[in-house]
Image 1 (cartoon, rainbow, N blue to C red):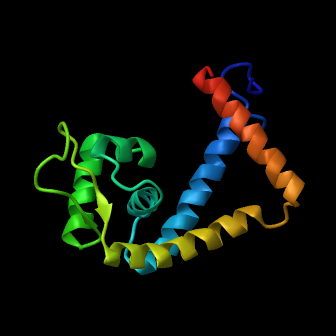
Image 2 (image 1 turned 45 degrees about the vertical axis):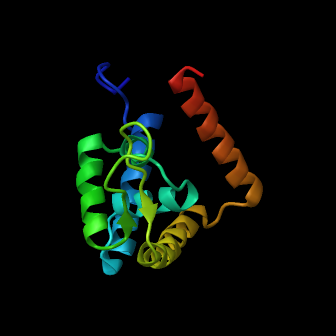
Length: 148
C-alpha cells in the first residue's frame, strides 16, 4: 500500500520495478539497434526466424509480443527490405511460413552483436550463480502468473 493507504507502494512494488527494468532495457535496445536501421520488434522477429525457421505470422506475433496485424505490417517491411521471404501460396492450410534471406541473416548477425552488448550490460556485476538465481526466480514468477 502507498503511504495514504490506497493503491500500490511504488517503492516496494515488484511489478513496478520490473516495468522500470523492461523500459530501460527496451530503451537501451532501441539505441543499440537504431544505427543498424532496425527496431526491437524487427530484431526479435529475425532472431526468432533464425532459431525457429518457418514460423507463421501468428506464431511470430506471439513471440515478438505484438498483434497479428502489427506483425503483418512488420513482415511486409522486412520482406520489402529483402530480409525475409514468404511463399506466394500457403504450403499447408492458410499459414505462409516466413524465412530469413541471406541478407536477413547478415543483418541479424550485426543486430545480435548489438543486442548481446546490451544484455551484457544487464548482466554486468552479477556472478554466474546470481544470474542463474535471478533467471530461476523470474521463470518461477512467470509460471505462477500464467497458472502453470
